[in-house]
Length: 139
Image (tube, one colour):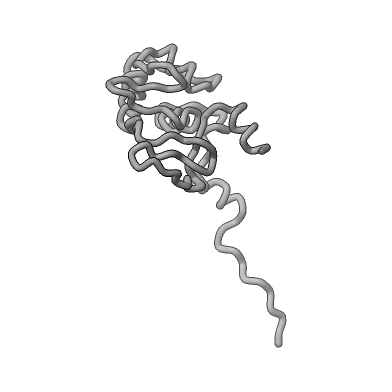
């Protein structure tokens, strides 16, 4: 048995870090390309209600100031064309609101048609309110 050293890694840790997807919430730079991801990361409950896009009890429009506020990034700027483009991406990605189900807890929802409790999958987000999430995690 000779001197066996571990094989050299094909990628260094720095290569792995650089090639991993960046968390849009931690990025110091703002780009219009990552704005839709950032928007839905911050507002996962955004959805279509009738003919409106609703986010946190607010109707979303292609208004530049509103979209910049909802992006919540100190370097976010949008001109009219970028605001219109972002609003179209939000409209494409937002799901339709479904009145059939009512989320009761982090674990269960109520099906109004069958009158039954249904367990929620673990990856379903039940709220986008930070204080509520903290309270639910502490319970």
